[in-house]
Amino acid sequence: MSLVLSEEQQILQSTTREFVTGRSSMKRIRELRDQAGDGFSRPLWREMAELGWAGIIIPEQYGGAGLGYVDLMVVMEELGRGLMPEPMLSSVLLGANTLLLGGSDAQRKAHLPKVAAGEELLALAQQEPKSRYELAHVETRAERAGDGYRLTGEKIQVLDGAAADQFIVSARTSGGPRDASGVTLFLVPRSAEGVGVQVQHRLDARGAALVRLEGVQVGPNAIIGEEGQGAALLQRVTDRATIALTAEMLGAMTVAFEMTLDYLKTRQQFGKVIGTFQSLKHRAARLYVELELARSLVMAAHEAVDAGKSDAEIGRLASMAKARLSDAFVLVANEAVQMHGGIGMTDEHDIGFFLKRARAAEIQFGDAAFHRGRVATLDGY
Image (tube, rainbow, N blue to C red; front, side, top):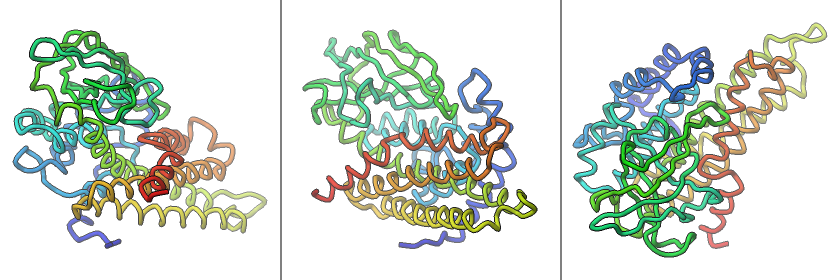
């Protein structure tokens, strides 16, 4: 495994960091938090699309850049450094990826070029009340209605759902609520009759939605992939989105660590810089070790996708990386707030935004305990 970026990836990293630094200050993040909007900037998202980021993993034949996951990792890490809430995860990694991995050619041609251009937003409506992290726990029903289907149910915590133009909805066409088979994915327009969207905002101020489906009619062409096999497709999509999320988490925890080091080097108590205190040196050293361990796993997971590893191996590395990053990001954020002292507890200081992001990202797609259990299961324990 290579732990060094190529020259082209280093250039991508430099240009992305320059863009993020210049266009997304913490002042902007505060303003987005305090506004009753989408939770992100649509004009800035279109600029990001013009730079090729929205289409970074979308093949050129569908209007994308056709790059790999290590290139994606570089961009996601830099977006994490700026806590940028634009819909890379929701529209690209969850939405577009579902069409890439399971959609028909007609569906891809109809939607992927628009996603890559920043003109259309997709959202995956999968999670349900009490489903926790079980992708196959689906109670939303899809009943036959003529040559199509009628969808009825409720989806919670739909990432960027309030801003979405199209929903990818998991619904049960057969079987019980927790059966692995019988789940089917449908492409549902936001404008379809019977679709209700309730705006929500998460702890980290990012946009989400409660989506209700009340007898929504869709045609047979709305099915993504094979009928009844949607849970397996959801797992493939979620594993890749989880891997990308860990890169974003790595970027955010790196900045939180850097901010803390800067504070330790300037804050004085008892006539001394607090960074000279041995106990704080030890704590900072531990955070550095956690960062480097996390970076190795994040790179390994992205390289596995580019290398065409099996879905089982990709899933195992996704869970290993997410378990490590969930623990490490929360640790770094907690320690950062504590070592900043009283000012770290105030809203005026930026470090609190990283703690909130750590807590939200920790449980996105499964917390550390869930993913450690999954690795154990995949390894036969």
